[in-house]
Image 1: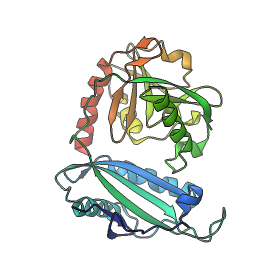
Image 2: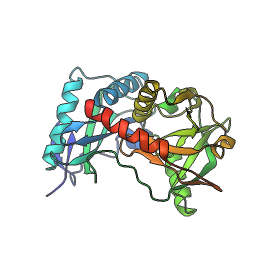
Image 3: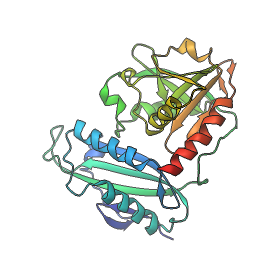
Length: 284
C-alpha cells in the first residue's frame, strides 16, 4: 500500500512534491509540530496537544484559521490514519503547521498550511523498555532559557547535533543544559529525577519544552500521596544523586535511564507511573 499524507485536507501520495523550496519551515524554521500517539482511532491527550498548538501559534503570531477547531483537526488526523489503512493500529502522528510561502525574515502573510503524517507504532499502549539506556551531558551548545525554548517549533538543530554526538560516542541519548549550566531536558523528551519519594523536574523558566507527557505526569503526581513533586532548577551534580532518572514524551511515554557516567539507576517508580499514565490515556 502506498503511504499517504494529508496536506491542507487533501490526501496525497507520500511521493508527491506538495512542498516547494520556498516553504518557510525549510527556509526559516517558521513552523510548529505536534507528535501525537493514536491507538485504534483514539488520540491520546488530544485536547492538550490542540491547546498547546493554538497557544504556540498565537505566540508566533500565526493566523489561526476559523476552521482550526478541535473537532476539525481531530477528523483530519483520523482521516490520515484511515487513508493509510491504520485505523485499527497504533500510530505516530506528526501534525505540522507552517506559515505560508513568501517574504524573507518578515513574512508576506501570517496565514498557515498544515501537513499530517502517520507511521505505525509497535504497541497500542505505553510499555516500559528495560533494555540498557545510557546517557551523557551534551555541552557543545546550550538551550536558551526563555519562552521560545518551551515551544515545539521546527528549530531543532541543537537536538540534531546532540543526536549525532550521542551516536558518535555510543550513548543512547544526551541531556541538554541551559546557559546557566542547569539541566533542561533530553534530546527528545522531558527529564524527571527520583530520590526516595521526591520527584523533581526542571521548571519551564529553565527552558524545557512544555511537554504534554510532562504536563500529564505532573497532574498525576499531584493527586498521589506517595510522591512529592517539585518543579525546580536541577544541576548536573543532582543527576548522580538520584535513585531513578527517566525521560517522558508523547510517543514513548516513560523511558527509564539505566546509566549516567558511573551511576546506575533503578526503575521502580517509573514502572508504577507508566501504568497510571496508560490509565489516564484511556480516559481522554
